[in-house]
Length: 568
Image 1 (cartoon, rainbow, N blue to C red):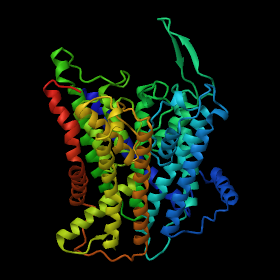
Image 2 (tube, rainbow, N blue to C red):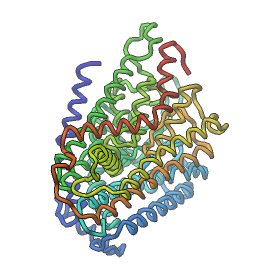
Image 3 (tube, one colour):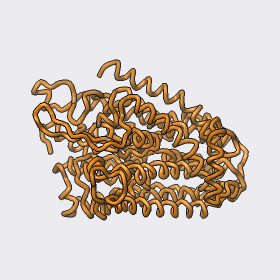
Image 4 (cartoon, rainbow, N blue to C red):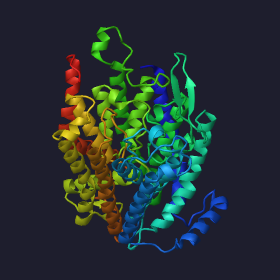
């Protein structure tokens, strides 16, 4: 790898660090509606109109049960709404390719996928979805599902920051403000940039062209830039085209690729500072940021070196430039490795290379990023509440070590809080292992494999890991557009979303009622190197204990086979 590659990583890290504080402060102003924002003169009238039209009283707050009920009801309606639009696609406008409705199982999978912020795609976008479906069904859910995740995170932050109260906010007000003040403005700016770089934004039919070989080629058109923007900003990842951000229309240049990396990081990184500012402990937030940064950079280094080393059998043939399989030449090996690590650590799911073509260890890192419960910054909202679960777990373990009742920012962490923390962490592990094991021993599971042996197992493990963690990326070698795969993946996506959200909201309801105790000499220092090290250790330990056996059967053993010249 060249010096320029590491310079790219350093510049990305610097830009993200510089943007984290101002964007985090802005998030705080939006999520605490009593504060004004720079966009108030333009957006405030629209906000008031929506409240009046929908009969929402933003000042009427909800307890945790009411807040959770609103989230569940809204998501169920979103799934039904999306399913109906896709089901009637053939009769709706802007269907220039005269595409029929997707099958019932693909419709179910897609509706659940986009409504849970997963955006797992068992189809090729340009050959399955009309422009209207892409915009009115999928892009709308890109906004709404991202807003739900950030609303959940905001409710948990309020639970920690407030004391002796019963309410954690108003879900409907949070949903409106997050979309109006955060997601829509950022998407408008990003889409404008993408258009300037050559990403299409039109309503033209697909173009037929003759290649120099005399073959007819279909060139996709459509409103790509607008969907590209929210796909990246909202940690969605669902591509307008089948190959996602590897397509030159979705990601045409190295500049757009670097800009996408910044946008993927923007909200997940800044929400950590928002948390620190809200609880009055920004040093603690920076310690969390540092812990996640250490884990992320370590993964990037391992993945990049593995891809740069390439396949030993190819080296014997004189191909010493690393593993170029499945990568775009306009990005190169390092940028592809960096993008793969970013999109899996931050739960975006977009891809600019084919993860199925990564080396065994190169593919291990994106898979492990997902299986660490997406706490390495994670998705919009989801990343913050997920890492806070690991913070609670770290505080609990430290309390056991020193023999005191665990205490976090002045609030005692009691039995109910730890139960909710574990209820939020453990279901994902069970979902992934159960569905992967079932697919390994079933004819329907084996029928979708693109490869045999350890690599085939990795394809199935990656699919259910991605679905359960609401990431959405895939190894791409697995054919999942079958009734059982689509249904099982949909179940994994739904359970992976709400078996985490429900305990998190309950935890927020518990914490908001607690009083704050004064800090003593025995309080665990949460803004220290000790805490940062403990958090890194807990994150890696949980991943190692729960997924190391499965990873050993997949990419780890495949690496040993590759060193012996055996492939699948």
